[in-house]
Amino acid sequence: MDWGLRNRLNRIIRPETGRAVMLALDHGYFLGPISRLERPGATIEPLLPHADALMLTRGVLRNCVSPATATPMVLRVSGGRSILAGEDLSDEGLATSLEDALRLNACAVALSIYVGSRHERETILNLSRLVDEGTRLGLPVLAVTAVGKELEKRDARYLALACRIAAEFGAHFVKTYFCDDFQKVSGSCPVPVVIAGGPKLETEMDVFRMARAAIDQGAVGVDMGRNIWQNPHPVAMIRAVRAVVHEGASPDDALLLFEHVKRSAE
Ligand code: R5P
Image 1 (spheres, rainbow, N blue to C red):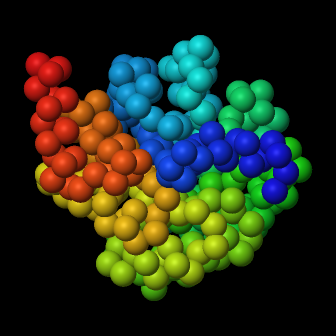
Image 2: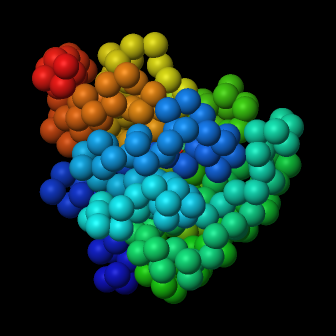
């Protein structure tokens, strides 16, 4: 790995702990203004100091994030379908150039691959092309193993296959979902794996338990969105998730910290 690429990756997966708390805010690229992302700038501002990196599109980055920030940006560069386009969301192309990613000083670029879908081949070849170009420019590539609306695909057998394929084609790190037997997913993927949070869980404890189990079973961190910023206390949430990821906090300790931060803000 060239110095620039390694340095960019080290700004996201922190060398002090080998872990990362990424904040995902890219949902609007196919979902539009979902709840709590209607005004992305207002959602981002209080959370920015607590995230190791943001994952977002160029439109939100340019319009809603201060260029004075030192927080690294992971730029989503794939897209092209919306939630209105029917069941099949897999027809994604490369929608943002790496020239623009560099212009925006992105630390990495992200694209979704849809393993097992109608457009599997195109999305995997897009990954390969992005890795060729990203490696040439020193930009790490994050492959997201998208499952679209088929949530039942989120088992260890499917996710291990999808993550492994992402790594085989050169992804520098991979984002996937947590599942039972997650060690099968992380253990057969030769590059770092972070987990998405998925739709908002019922309780904060559910989120802390998922993050703890993912780290214990080999994830290097989270790239979490809705379970942080759709919580009524997003700063308390991200701080508690950080404690789990970076400090080895138990779910009980994370809940105590969550309650403490929540009370101090009231
Ligand atoms: C989905 O394709 C997007 O990349 C989101 O960034 C991802 O789902 C993570 O966000 P959440 O934790 O809300 O699932």
